[in-house]
Length: 495
Image 1 (cartoon, rainbow, N blue to C red):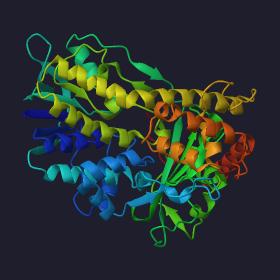
Image 2: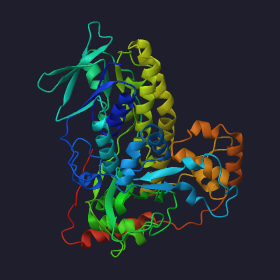
Image 3: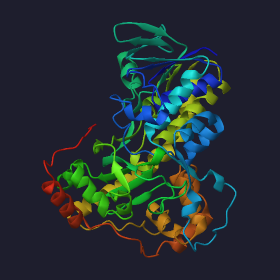
Image 4: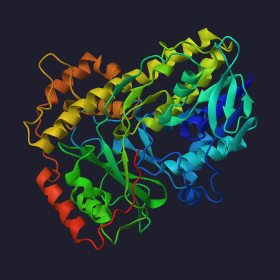
């Protein structure tokens, strides 16, 4: 193997460095941000400032696909995260009581999520990658252009800020949502394939907390009704609570972008008022139980995007490979971004090992693999977001509500699956495997038995605790915002 240059030292870039090093590549990672602090992982992660990754301190989770990838391909990284206080969360513990088919089945061992702050997992990856033979991490280096070999059909390296040139056999774009290989190719005069995009329609307001008392491994202030967290996506907003490492947890509240009536969620008082009113959250927020350890951070989610530069439609520049969010972005509400990035990194290494010659055929092969991995999740995210945006706009604008069910003859919706899962263990298992990124939506919905069972169980009424109505939530947030001393913005990062 030759030399691999990875641009970007976040989750996707570090995972790709590990994956390529394991198959014999010499790897150089170029990252514009400073090196992370020294010291114990959890403590250093809290001090790690990531100006180039504004979403780093937002609420995150690692789905079962990500856990499985680490177990099989980088178990030491998983061990480092667990050693820093991360929790493995057994999702089968939240299988509805009384549901049919409740007995444990083969494959249930995969239904595990990791409760861990992103910065802790990323720092575990960083330290593991830095210790690997053949891997060099260079911080404080910004890549500004791609350098192509004569003929413009193969990479030769990159150009860094200040005009420095770094040669490599392959270049991996791990620049995240910026997907800088798009501008690199444009700068080289290479036409870009058309992107697939769809609105995410989400603003996320997130805050971190720490429990004041040590709890047993499977003990929480309330049961985790989603297995890896508490909460749901309701008819006018979303609320998600995720346990993390070292007794920390995050709360994220999602709204439509530009919802001025709920702009008070950016303040500590307004956020707390909404979070406390959200089903299942209040016991966690009791002042005797926890305290906030971060400001409220607000982030507008990017478009859902399957970038054309990562697709088989792109003119194949040999040796250039986008990975993770630089290939595909899906709404972070689904919580699958880190897991897909990990899976993509190791699949890229496998694909290059299977087809080692660096040419257009190799590039096309990797592009097909990338589409096979991401396209089902991109398609599902766009469809779900469109339905949710329509439902939320109805609530915000007072227009007729979206019915929430598919027309006769159509495949079941995610909402129908969730309702049926409360009665049927088979549906619960399939629905959970999809939410945890183990089974794609097309794979799940091609199972005629699964679809029939959803149809049988879908009409069930929802008797779970309901969130406040739109008018009540707005009233609570506004009252708290205006009564709080100063009522200033606590902290916001916009993108």
